[in-house]
Image 1 (cartoon, rainbow, N blue to C red):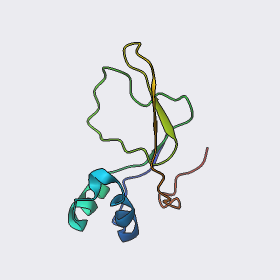
Image 2: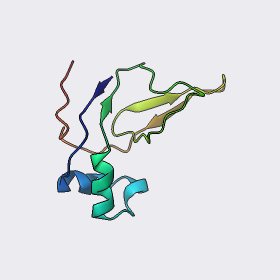
Image 3: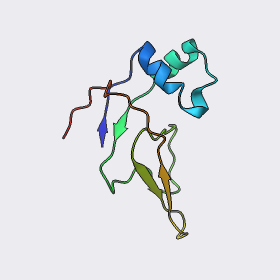
Image 4: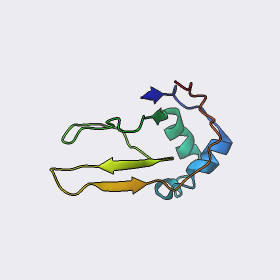
Length: 95
């Protein structure tokens, strides 16, 4: 996993965040506050994001790619993103 630093105020990024249905109702000040507490994580294919029955206090938004969700041996579900082109504003180093 590659993780960015905490994100900073960025009006262009805030406009992109408004494209996420869950966040479209928040005003700019609220989104700026959330942005300051946010990081971008990039996972490799097949890398575990969160183990079933574990605790995580974060909220995850899928920006690009797809995620496979396996639970208690049930049929896996694959979630796809609603692609937003962020044009890499997070300056993540490629490994």
